[in-house]
Length: 139
Image (tube, rainbow, N blue to C red):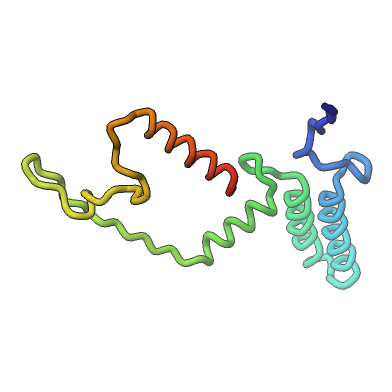
């Protein structure tokens, strides 16, 4: 049998440009490009607050991780949490009483395809093994 070498660090992105991955390089480059165009088109009074905000966001998008999750994924999840509707229903169940009979729903078997137990344990065991092999062949 041949043996294959399995990569060890499959969840670590490759470093492309110096110590940065391609995603980090693109986020920093996009932030730098926005700051450059702001320097050209905005007066100094508007440029500095814009540059600080955009630079901080670009650095956060590039390097920040919250709970081992990249910041862009965290922002996406936070946005979807705010936008998606949430509707929770809690139904209080009545407590079961000691002398009460179970309802019809509780009496129904969980798996309808199981046969009733026979007298021979050996035939039951053979039947269960046949079912397991059929399931493996189908799956």
